[in-house]
Amino acid sequence: MSSPGGDGFEGEAADLEAGIWVRGVDYLSGWRDARVAAAELGDALRLVGVDTAGIRLRAASGADSAGMVRLELSAGSAREVAVLARVAAARLGRVG
Image (cartoon, helix red, strand yellow):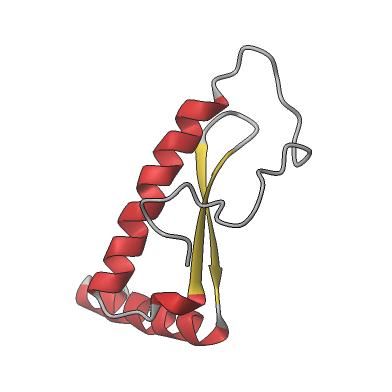
């Protein structure tokens, strides 16, 4: 997983060709917000015992400049997160 306090681009360059950049749009503030959100999510997943070695979180900015967090999971980590989501849903009475 990219370090939660990091910029999410460890070993990679930002993909500047991934979208259309509009002059005057503040993409950086959305990215900063996403960076904080990614760190919060990483901390929460570690707190509940998910093996974060199989998780990658990346901060990004959407076309509208809103912060986006991109989440990649190994199959094992995806199963762990799915179990935790089901437990949380049951506790909240949202089992369907």
